[in-house]
Image (cartoon, rainbow, N blue to C red):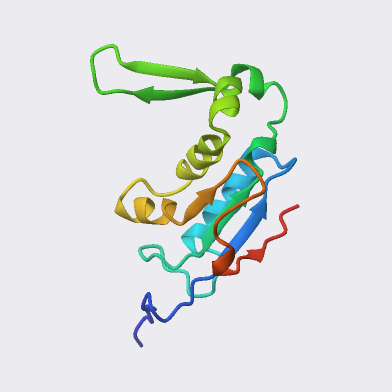
Length: 143
């Protein structure tokens, strides 16, 4: 007996669209990470990129539970001595709400070459408009 390992070209990759309006950030991010990783497919293989593309719209309408919106901070290091930059959740939500979902999903993906390939399949938009109509994304219900 040999273990069957699917080829990347054998597994079809589809496009999904998710409306993030009034959805909890962590729950949404974990489901998106599973779709990007390919864990929702029967052919899932941990070391291969078999996941689907995900388009997230209305990222500016995401919610956090409890008091997390008041104390959550995002960190970035510039590479220079003393170059730690902290940004509050509320400030980041005003400037770049897409970045919040991208960082939440990135934290749930592997931090290696495979993870970098998977995160490129995530497209996040603050509003309801997106340029991926030609790919015919299927609406994904997450409740």
